[in-house]
Image (cartoon, rainbow, N blue to C red; front, side, top):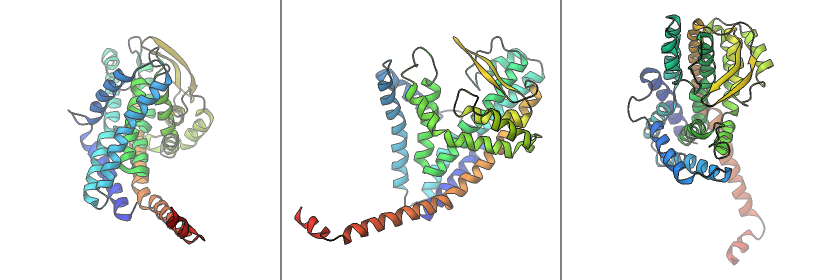
Length: 345
């Protein structure tokens, strides 16, 4: 990636983040919702209760947005302003930081007012648990866990892949993450078909989730938390979660807030019992504002890293790749008999 392209990507990430922070998700015609409808139609055509069909579905559903992003990147190779505009639009479309913080705030207000029925109705905007029997501590726990995990899924990971791979990375990551939400759960229908989508999402989140955990620990004082306690809980409990990535985020958040997460989660038709993460009391309504504030700080820090990467590490990696390619081509051309071999073909 040449300097103009790197600068355009960095500017687009910053502008897209600002758009999400100010405007939030588009009210109508959200591109992710449109992708979800297209993916559902594709699933209807390809579904079979086996992993091979799931792999074909995942490849097509993720490959399409990646190809669109790659074509746009190639088409704007010498048009940095157009590249920046496209990256900004893509970043705005795939980020969900403002919506995440808004839902956490709304849940906190409902619980502080003692309006548990209203809080139960809102929980579906954050996660897929059955809220019908949840009391205030369980609703607060579900919210804190969702804020922690989605800080990675909806903020840090898109910024990471946008920094590393530009517009194809942004669109490809969001497509994979959306598929995981659609078919990656352990229901009877998706036990095998959804496995490829779930594994791809796990793979794409390996680095962002760990980065989210580290940033949460480092920024714990923003939420009046203890950085050393957050670090201790994160190191001790991060591998206890059944997900290879969610535990990184949730354990760091538990340590930063001084609460205990985990326990029995009831979904529609199934339940899971997860190990406890962290020490201290169960979350309460007062913890939700702190969790949202910490999530926002982590997002800003991730933006700083993402905007810097294309201009530093990304630019250096691109220069080294181009140099290695030129050296390889020159070496091949200088080999004895290379010209005669080409002429004789």
